[in-house]
Image (spheres, rainbow, N blue to C red):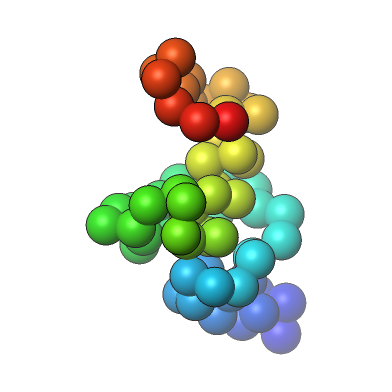
Length: 64
């Protein structure tokens, strides 16, 4: 059931998926490729997860 909850939370742009693993965050970034971090909570959380894991480096011009 927990896996189903995470998967369903990765689909809805308006729902915060909660904590993600690096693998889940990477997949979320792929699923929400056309979304912006300003509007998509899943992409925003995934980006935060990848930055904190030092798997993604933001450009200096990117918003926090």
